[in-house]
Image (cartoon, rainbow, N blue to C red; front, side, top):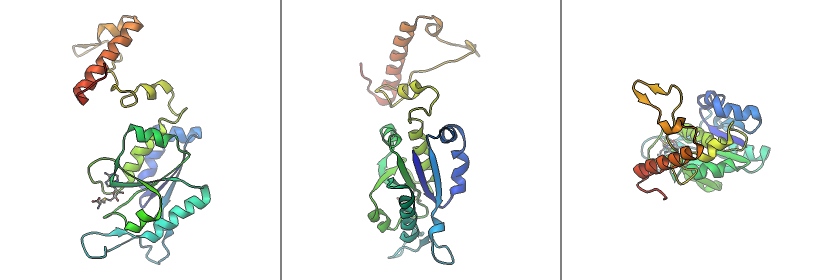
Length: 224
Ligand SMILES: C[S@@+](CC[C@H](N)C(=O)[O-])C[C@H]1O[C@@H](n2cnc3c(N)ncnc32)[C@H](O)[C@@H]1O
């Protein structure tokens, strides 16, 4: 996947990109990320990216010119991107959307700031508007990282154990089952005997049952 993140704060994003799964995916060649500071696409001496809203009101609004120029520059260089506009009014991100993004060759995230976007930015491109949840962040950078990480770990070959992504919560209709590791006993809390029984079929049945109980507790329903 080639990813372009349009942001005013590339240095806030960069360190996270270099670590763990996102760093590994880049080293593997499964991910290429360009951090694009759209302030570099301004043409005025003050490098202005925002201005007061017409009609009055609080805060500043992102101007269209630098963002149009940055998007068009990316698409000229690399071809058409699936374009994600990060905003609280978009559709809420979930595992299904992560999987959809993971199958795309080129994804561009636009990170807003201040009071948000001049409406012509919305109108000018075929965006998919996505929200991280029903709350307001100061900018889209964390949302872009969350969505990118959730998608990239689903790209075949990125995770060491492909099975882990398939068996996880939200990938099946059941939430993930509970897990333990060594030591067998810790501060009076013991690992359930079934897990050390060596009976793989019984372990699988037990885990499914536990997953069903957890799913029912959290979501109020679980497939039988
Ligand atoms: C302070 S917010 C603007 C909020 C906007 N005035 C509103 O009320 O919907 C600035 C930027 O942060 C990002 N942002 C804030 N909350 C977000 C969320 N829940 N999901 C995705 N991006 C978000 C968006 O890019 C947004 O343009």
